[in-house]
Image (cartoon, rainbow, N blue to C red; front, side, top):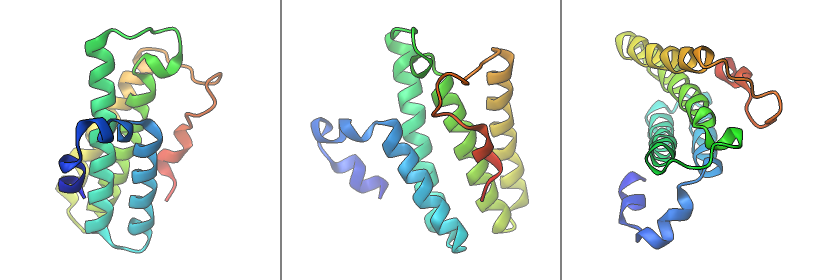
Amino acid sequence: ILSIINSIPFSISSFLLDHDFAKMLNRIGTIHFQRQENTYALTFYRLGLRIERLLYSSKKENNLDYSSAKNTGKYETLNIAITLNNIGQAHQQQKSYMKAMRVYQKALKAVKQLKSNEISHSKDGDVDTNHMNKK
């Protein structure tokens, strides 16, 4: 999948760099996870994670308008934490406990970053931390 995405011309692939597309990939990964198809789940999770990281990096580099919650990087940080948690669960299901632990620690670091910045998404509506433990 990643090689297919990378082979698409930038003008076409730029629409793929979107939160909704990343969330869709994460959800497809969750379907595979629930079916215990961890190799496929990890592929979709990692692709979604890559997109969220690219979105976060581009906002930091371009100093975008920070007037809305989606433009502050908080949204991406939470989505990154959720996806990392999902990756950790897939590794855990594969009994790759050390990999799972490392990924869970990265997810925890992202959550701590959010909490240390005293983030409140109650007005945003499309960020829900309850997804982190649901499978």
